[in-house]
Image (cartoon, rainbow, N blue to C red; front, side, top):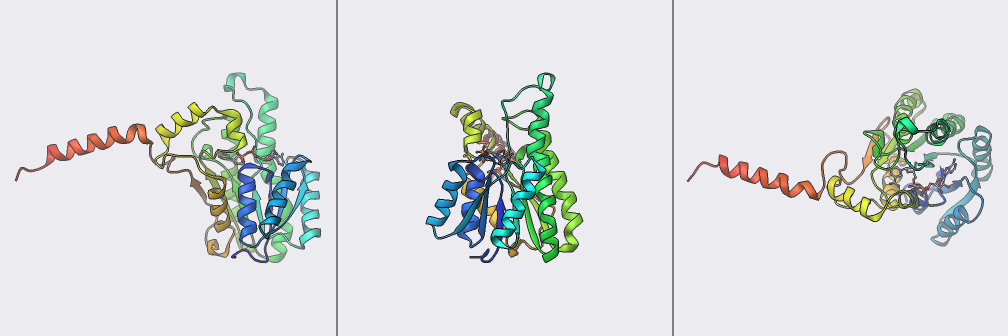
Length: 276
Ligand SMILES: NC(=O)c1ccc[n+]([C@@H]2O[C@H](COP(=O)([O-])OP(=O)(O)OC[C@H]3O[C@@H](n4cnc5c(N)ncnc54)[C@H](O)[C@@H]3O)[C@@H](O)[C@H]2O)c1
């Protein structure tokens, strides 16, 4: 268990990718603060599941777009566990998409307020504890939309995730001399309540066939495994990076094009072949 003795905060961990991350970090021995913005069963259910698997976790409610709530979250985590070694900025929102010409200013402010400002507020709030220990790992959950554009959301979402990469790179430089690593993970499609809410199975299938070389969506646990690695001492020399976990989405194309391109390559090879 490579995170034994560590304390981790995972924001937005009441369901979806955050839940997957919280479960994997707990399996690796970390004591986990399961944050969510809503009271109720979500975070408690994840805490119970971690407990049932032999791990240790507590639920703390906080809206990460509010400075006072983020400060209270960090204070409660420190009171409960005495340290914060790992911060995973996972909480994020995506609202029904619209074109920029129609995009309400209030929607822009809300999405940027959670996805980008919320990430900034949480980083800022944990830095004193990490700097005092001269060690820490911050992992920001961006998106493949941080490297190109969003397929599901609008420009607000794309801009917020590009901003997360900028914050990651800049902060990584600022805190390197305190031995704090700051990295981002860029998931491609991960089947979660957020994605199910905003897409149909037909849309997801068409997208996979066109875009994803490995031919499927990611699981929440697969994101958790990569975050766990970046949060461990095995990743001590990695900082300022944005790692895509996307089945090849950013580097290739899916099944629809594969056969066409392969056929063309094989034809070109045989046309060029020297007869025996
Ligand atoms: N699902 C995907 O395909 C996908 C792809 C790329 C990136 N992402 C990113 O991964 C992260 C998690 O996405 P998901 O698909 O699991 O979403 P989700 O909606 O299933 O879960 C998000 C969780 O965050 C919580 N949350 C939302 N706003 C919050 C706030 N202000 N404060 C605290 N908690 C808050 C929600 O209550 C929810 O529990 C997001 O940052 C998202 O942008 C998701």
